[in-house]
Length: 313
Image 1 (cartoon, rainbow, N blue to C red):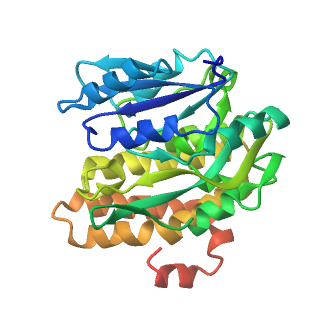
Image 2 (tube, rainbow, N blue to C red):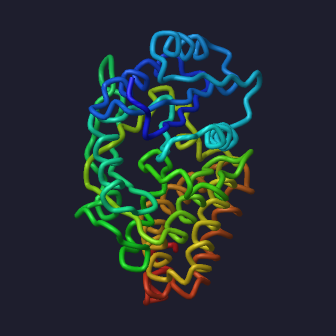
């Protein structure tokens, strides 16, 4: 087996029915020089057995087991500490890489010398007995298409819309002092903006590199925003990401983030708040809306205050 050039950190908890597809998507890669750290984060189902069988049959897999769940951020951080390859990336254990993903991502990074590269992704939704991939969403396309080499967040502010950890491959030394928040949901949003703010240069490609599963049973974190603790973590992540970009002086990227948050996040959150039994939910959404209105970049998104009020922003 050739020496690996990239390590994939693959955390999962109670995903026994999804993990085989994630593992198969790694083994189907046209770039075979990878290793994967499979992290069973305190599963009570057979996820650990699935991971163990993969490691027993393919030496490129290594398994780390947590007796009790420590959360996605902690699992990823533990994986980062074990990386000894030139590049590193992430794949959630219920998602799948497309076959040429690692080849396109690592080859481009090797050519450009950038700090990291981001690709496009699509959601796969339940259909019949399986899952069917959808189309690249407009904000993802704006972040990745057309492809750009050695760009930065000042020249390409729309890249800030691509906030997921698993659409990217980085140089491992880029993570020397970068880690995920632990004990919270949406841990990748602030880290993504830190990556954009810190990078001397990054690359983007329009290739779909990941199929992101929307679970039929609705149990993923992104499908749980009607829960008040999840909402609070989500709003903290959104605030934190904006703050990172502001501190970096990337005001065009802040405007891009505001535009997307107002277009895609506020309406569904306000709809949930309107019928939520806990008044603290509506209060949290309203406070966040008011914070956005107070940002100096808000005027660039909604220069007409009357229109903003009419839209309930």
